[in-house]
Amino acid sequence: MHAAGSVQKQLLASPSEAADPRDTALWWVHSAVPMALVLLSCAPAWWPVLCEKLCSLIAALSIENLRRFVREQWPEIVGFTSVALAAVLGLFFGPGGHHASNEELEALRSFEGHVVEMRRLWPWLLHPDSLVLMYQLLRGLGACLLVYRGGAVTGGGAFCPALMQLAAASGLRLILWSSTTDYQPEGPLGGQFAISCTALTFGAQLLAAWKAMQAASTTSWRSKRILGLQYMIQVLLCIWAACMNHFTVGHTSLANIAFSAIDAADMSAAPIFTTAACVAAAENTPGISGALYIMAFAQVLSFQWYIDFVGVLDNPTSSDSFVRALLIFKTKLQLSVYGDPFALMTAGHIIQLFAVVVSCLAFFGFNIGFFKNNGPKAAPKHVIEKLDLVTYKRDLFRDDPSACCAICLGDFEDGDELRRLPCQHQQFHRSCVDHWLAKAGRCPLCIADIQHHGT
View 1 (cartoon, rainbow, N blue to C red):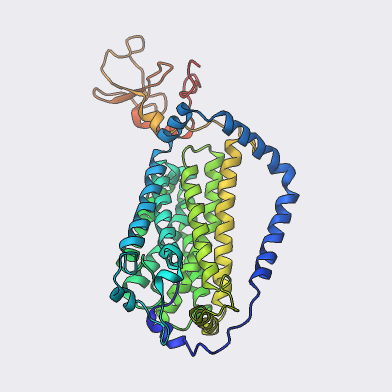
View 2 (view 1 turned 90 degrees about the vertical axis):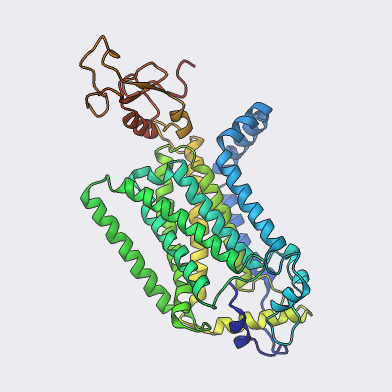
């Protein structure tokens, strides 16, 4: 994010200094052409699938299907709408927002000798730093959806290391923004709004990590020890990378290192998160596609902020004095470094974007059958909760007085809650069969699919 006003004043020299020339069009050509060539070379794989999905989508356009989609994706719709509403309210009523007075805007003009026309600089006051805040909120929403949809506990807690690392990155952001004056987000979504957003994201990721850790605790002691060792290695590598590559414009070395450590933590979490997402896709874990798509969109916003941060979108030939001053500031920022933090930042954003796109493609591929998966498909949480509950009494199983739970083989006691499946089998403790159905949505006795029984 842009450095605080004091850092800007420290680095910003006279606007007459010439910024380093850079060819924006050439940069876009170098970036877009390889991606286009890769897509074209892979066209035989993705084009038939895309056409098939478009045809099925057109055929499925009906009011009833739309209602069913809204019911199934209601948590994702409500969450995304809440994030968008919070951003819009911040853009209107936040510091420097649309309704800010001229005095409030004047206080935000931190460039010496230059009048920052806030309402002219960024359309609709969408300050680049606002993208970081929306990115944080969407990441928190993704973590909440992983918990709600049961994705956090998939694969024996496979998401645990990644969620712990993401929580560590959000915790560093919270400390950096709340206790220092360096590297704070600017614009209408800055200040206390930024701190509150990061605190919410940090809490959501901690909750998701705790749920994943509970699932991981059911594995063998050897797996838990490896999990802890893996996390410690990740933390040490992140600290080392940040110490070797960080900016030097902050008031303290701790703030400089913490800013780079955030990128290192996010980058190290990305491949682990992708692996866990592929495990969830292979296990047919239902309902977490929304969380993956939301986190992918969040990463796109973060990448857009990074493009602005490095100055790729700025026009070096612009006659606007403020744009030229920004280029001078960004150029000097690139020189005020220890090691190469821009390389760390670039690698982090590219790896994160690639990882989350691969996660979405993997889940999409398993859902449409592009990847073979003959295993049983897990039942959604809302389907399991709609199944009938039966209170056990001694005469419930008259034909078999010695009946016990078909899953844990434990005896039933008066008052125990049993779950009755659509096939009418009910010899299961509620907790036992719920856990079973969350992994494989079939009756343990007759292997009937609880979602398609009788169809």
